[in-house]
Length: 633
Image 1 (cartoon, helix red, strand yellow):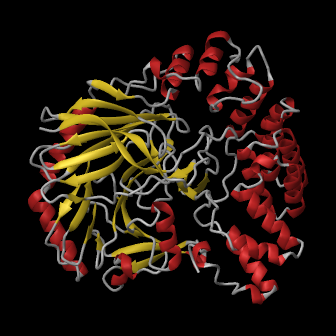
Image 2: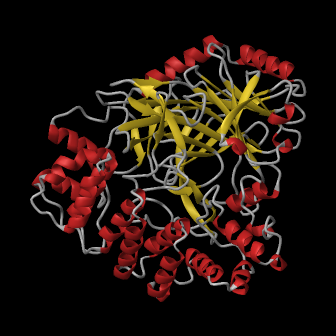
Image 3: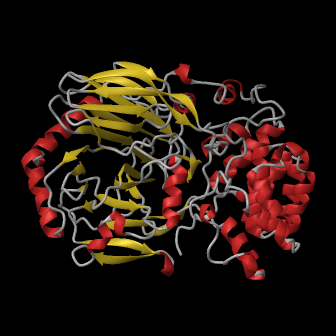
């Protein structure tokens, strides 16, 4: 029977670094989602801090893992990285069923910036790679339906004010790992909900992705990302990852009543399959493409490790759509992942039929529903033993709700123990108890942030220090009350933290001159604060504020002058001043823009403009090979 153990995984790893003390108020590349037929843009990560201080210096470092092992499977989970299923070893053949990245290398892809590729990730809450991607989660030993050890992971999601959990079961004799996500809405209102399970698998020669659909939709970025319908029968190249040139999302049109699954098989008909309850209706293929830009991104994420693709499953048919979760609802469903073989893949219809017959023989609807029922029942029971601590935010929210006499956000299956409280939550616990902000908040750091549910407590605080006004401004901002946010931050002046916040609010309200001036004042106050310096360089670059960049370069502390964003800013100023040789010298160095964002073209635009001025420097459309990160032509 399956056994659960704790261990350490030691692999070459970059340093994750410290949390950014300056909360994100605007993300240029935030995806525009939809909810109940309307645009639903959330372009900030509040109250979560950003994780953007990582490097690319690989050293062997330990990662805490939970290992769930049966007679046929060995599953390894990264407990400090969102519970990511890092490895799924199929013991009969020694085959890895998921893509195992040889390194841990964060890059700028997630809601909070830092994300890494490989394995299977659980994305809940906001559209995008989860806020928990590089953060610890709670983990516990459970009793599975057959009496064997199981694993449960869970956490409190702060933007929605909800909890989530996933229970894992590896039955003896089974080639499949089963898991049951469970999400809860404790509020008396409908909330927008998001869940996507993203599975990285190795890209293989002749490999093809299959799903029970005849059509699929893809964004056509040349037409403003409008979705275009394609025939999977008449356009077979869509589902052969190595026939795609550029990065692409492919959403399979699975009809209601059809059993949802997505598979990847190689040229010999062997591969893996992800199946689920009908509630998880969405299925998607993601490929990087075969052109240099896609290969460059793959190498950037793995330091030249093997290429991968992703197959995914979600609550909505499209990744940019939220689903409405009713008040006080609890949702469960079942997912399973394992090997599949002997699937002839060259003919789409025959391949889909072969997979359906395989599922009917080995995973009938009735047997799958029985597993779903059993695992759902066990997922409602208390854990046998907590083996890993998550954050203290769930415990703090439980304390706040208890203080106000409202329903708790936890249940017996997902406890948030008081001992999970750390220095991040203690000032807020003190506010609950005494009505004043804790002295743990010193003058150099305003502490961790909370949401608009804390506005009344902050407004009634007996001690309105600058930190209290700073936090009140962020709570108002999250609520959409920008006027009150501005007023609160003005009361926190002359703090450089307040100048920075006002600068971003100025930008949002298109007060560009004020934005630049507030940023300059913030840097004067904190000339060596690297997070701030990087942010100002990005914003001024986006605004084309070259004069502002020159001011920042002149007042920034010497300790930050070699940061990648400063080096880029120096090259942008050189271009503005006609010093093309200095710009060319910038490109003579290895690419080092560590926090480059997916779809960012700042460096490419600099190259293009330099070469358009003087084409003896190079082709405007062809940047140096190791600088080419374009996602489209």
